[in-house]
Image (cartoon, rainbow, N blue to C red; front, top):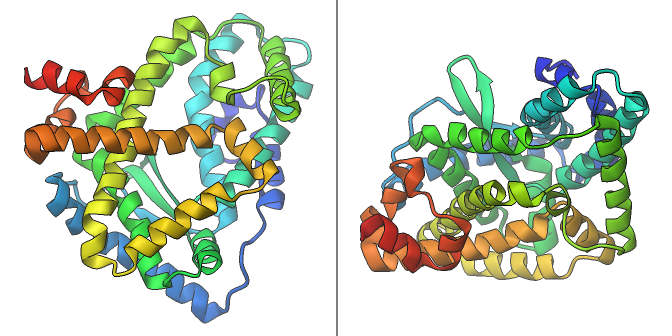
Length: 353
């Protein structure tokens, strides 16, 4: 992988191998004609642009213009973009570990093993993700980027049997809300990064041993010897407080996007109720392996974040109005904790008295 941020993590994770494995696993997606592909890409770009003022009018958040590009990508390009993003996120962890044990025996083999595991996970996710905002992407005059995965959008709209025009705008509304959140609140990305670096700084030990332990834990998850997700398994009691803070923020962001979709959707998407119902039913009807991988990767936890975060946002808006709720974006101290997400009155009392 050509991204320079990958170099400092290559001794722990072979990112080139991860990309190769993921690209093979993910496939190319549904069969479409050239005209169908062109129409899908054009409609997703237009949907993202159309969503910006809709999100602004509903939320009151004003995003900086042209600072976070919208990219409509295929599955292999999504894999490449996320391998680069993960390499950047994991750099502090790798630097911390490698400073303690340089040239640890077995790291070469471990890097291949974790690279293959990362590739399998990226491949699985790359066939599922409809869209994603990467807040940590940096480019010339760019801070973050929105990725819309056209083949997956087409695949799901066909599988659900929903109106493709409505479904594409529905997806864009959710993902554009995330883009607006980070561009209208410029400190948010740095805040999340600093929280992740706190977790990274607390990870100690022999890199080769950690790789071996992680591999064993993955096997235990697949064989049912343990429960939870990879995030749970890598969290020590000392890290739990920071992880809970990150969980609170992610629940806020996801729940807020869900509330925006439900608030704006009925006005501009005629079949939004049908889309929501079918999308929920599809999620419940996945197979055994799919459910296992979703648990392993923490995707089911993410779904819970949608629900808890949406309940929090609705409760806060009901009590203090949208302007009162928007105090959450003023400074990091106003962000809800995990406990406040589950009990919105705690946040209202703390922030509004």
